[in-house]
Image (spheres, one colour):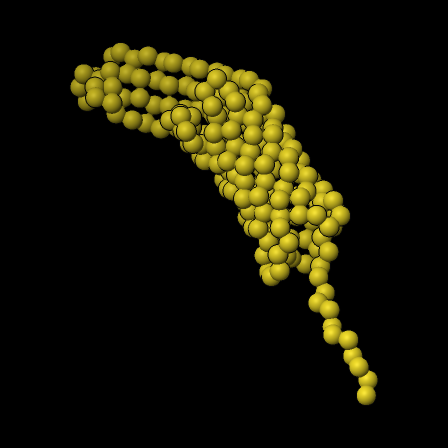
Length: 193
């Protein structure tokens, strides 16, 4: 009688280097959310995995755009806000992805970044004595630009796709160390290949 050795489960090997592309929604948080609404993010990067380890090195280049807009009534004053904010950043750090068996993989990341922040705010306030009488008003403009260090913390889940690629969902908390801390939350979906 022939003796057969038990079949070994085939596991898919992770490529050593993966290119990543993604986009999504960014929400301002902290004090900066008093001035900024949500926005969009586009991002790209590389992840290098040393042989057989759960810890990788990841570098990202990203661009975030936030809008400012609104109209409000504050006692006898009406106000309108318009403006924008751009954040361009280059980040590098570590990714921890424990070996998991099953359909999805969870991971966490921590990065240090260099970020360029550009902010423009236009605000017009006017005093209305009656419904059609608005004789006085004030216009305020504030432009700010700085390049500062920052840091990112994130969690994600990755799902396999065809031909060694994968798609993922990721949430990060990013902080740029400006005079008033610039905090925001990118929520993204993307593809690794």
